[in-house]
Length: 396
Image 1 (cartoon, rainbow, N blue to C red):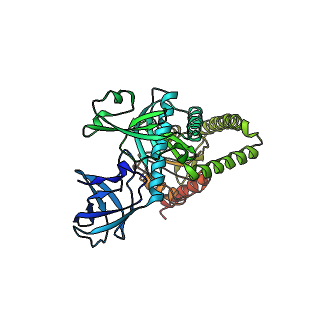
Image 2 (image 1 turned 180 degrees about the vertical axis):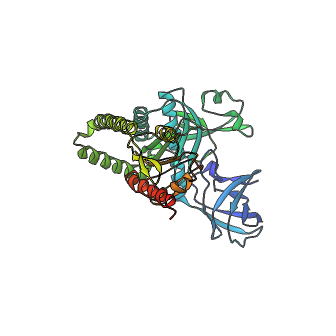
Image 3 (image 1 turned 135 degrees about the vertical axis):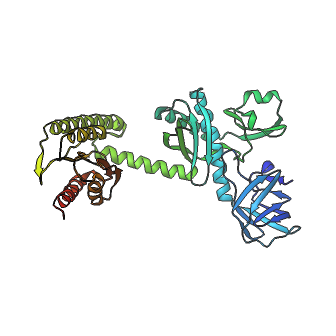
């Protein structure tokens, strides 16, 4: 059984211990300040006896330390050190997550916490429930007010059947043993948690939400955030981007969202007009005679994939007919269809066209489609596919 020093002193960075056993690269100590990870928080790293600790895990009451290349043996006395910069970053992230989620719950009681990820590279929580940026702005303001208030973060152990757990955030099925560790952030949050935390909200310095993205099917949203100096630097960077964007579209910063909404609406109107033009051009499309074959071809900007596919398949219902058509919107798409009476293969013509634009696609003998990332190269793809058709018709 490993004595867990981090439970009583999460700020302990150096300690001595005795090696209990060594299993290859995994070392067990009689006591350890290395947090083995849990509750979404990543494990600690550091050094044992001068050897690097690359990973830590908990197993049947023991803490196992991955110490690659060690020459340790049971009974050895070792000096140990936690990588404090990493540990403190994770502690801030974990406490920041508690603070942010507790405020979100107050703003929207329907929100449910699904998953947490607190690592050096990413700090996030996945939730179910309605969220939007205005709510996130309000939550961040309240969270940073709590940071400025320098609220104490304390912990207490209570029995699993204590009345105290009725008023805390807890998932009883995840509690092992008879005791529950409650982490309190002032009067804002009370939650069951076995992770390591900072002692005061002032250590967070700042909390900043950087992303709000879909997390389906696991949850509704993933909220990514930063704390401390990194949050400050990112806030300055984002502020600068916002100011430059406002200047670029000749809007005041406070009017940026409305201005972008207007631009988006105007862009949609333009796209709808281009799409309508594409449909009209497609309806008026006439075939050209190429080596005894009727060839329908063209670039129809703004058309959706389904419309182009249906049109191509309808056009080749006639005899000795080939349709090679492209559309360009956010991506380039190339469609090839051939009537069944011709001894030609759509896949070969598609490959000719997409090879010219570094695209990919597939299909069958009489129909194939594919695309590429650069919509400006639609003509290159169309011309290459047409050239491939001519070569095959002329036996070249």
